[in-house]
Image 1 (tube, helix red, strand yellow):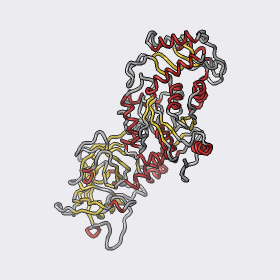
Image 2 (tube, one colour; image 1 turned 30 degrees about the vertical axis):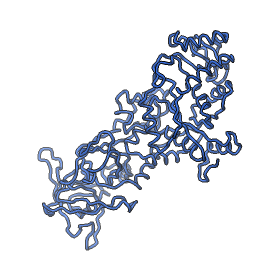
Image 3 (spheres, helix red, strand yellow; image 1 turned 60 degrees about the vertical axis):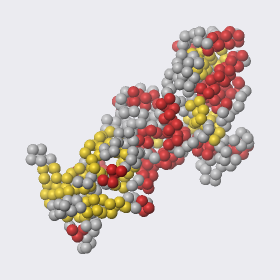
Image 4 (tube, one colour; image 1 turned 45 degrees about the vertical axis):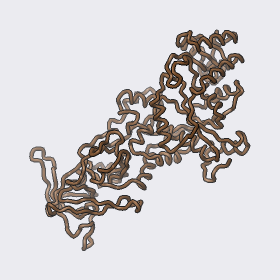
Length: 569
């Protein structure tokens, strides 16, 4: 089994290659992605998915298992299982025949627990949860042994079987591994490996009223599946001694746990608990809200699998926790959509322009390039008429310096069409608001140039008023105002740090008629606006809803900020 020459050489792949060279696992590479079905996957999970499936795919014969660690029925749901499978497939990965559940092994896990009891390596403890925490000690003080720690094997087996048979209430007893109450690693101070929990399980029904703890089930599930390299994030580093102890104590197949840094991203939250709080509190519309860092949210927002994979490659694999700027993720999606998304024109805040010297009944069609990065995408026909819409921000009565768009007496170019000059500003007599502009066009400039070769500084996008379609556009911004979510126990109310401007809904936007055929999920670049996609849930035929995936770089905005002025170049 060999690795490709162009495979990455991060420390995990280096370990895998060393193991292959030494024939540690008989030339096998078997990884696994083990999500708990208690929430939707987010961008951090995408990094793990790309790593686990990627490592397996780089070696001939390598496989990656998808295994649901469904050991806590109180928090799990089939909805999450379905969404996880959809997300993994959407990213482009396939587990083939290797779909598993920790619940597949409940009988085996129970038998292993009885073996630990029989070998004197586990005991039934009758302390309460609060007492167990008190007896565990602290980081600076050793724990104390439970008074039930020396129960005879026969009594422990009897109690454990009666726990299984439902004789005791939840919390009356737990099964603990007998390891070392003085260990400097709190995870090794006789950790709980089984607890009583009367809850209906989505797969096993009411067969069990005791369920294994995650650390115990995870190690043995890896062993049962003969996982060679169990890749986990750094928070499991302190759990590795328990992982190894479990496999050694039972003398079973020894999988190897390796930890890597999790993904931390600015301006969002990555904790499942916090994401659930956002959903249940109505702060977002659901797990797939386009502001969420969930894979389903990114998909609905218009992100592509290729962009997410590229982002994960750029982030890389390391042993040190770092915080990655959201700007890198945005860069990756811009680069991908720039190559593949068709260009169209859309006016988000329309201002009516009447071209007074253009015939009222005349309609022309101009050829517009679909994507200059890909000539094979060809061109489309854009209708032009006497009345068009332009962006309201593209006109200023008293323009600042370096504002090169439309102003009274100024000539600009309508992209693909002609040159126009503003002659008159029409206002609402009651409010004074500008309602329309009256302009003239140069017939010699049709097609975008003039015989005298003169040039103008400003080029505007537009749509023909009678031909354009009305659409709703949703402008999404960062979920959080903070650049870094510093963890769950920092004492701050993260809800108060939500960005109040994370969503702006624009109605009455005008789009090119070609977008009438756009399907849900289709992606486009709105010229000079950004990248947008058709919303996968709320769009209807004839009533499209567009989500902004990411904005374009706006050089004028940076100039404005530095000069303290308003305007767009």
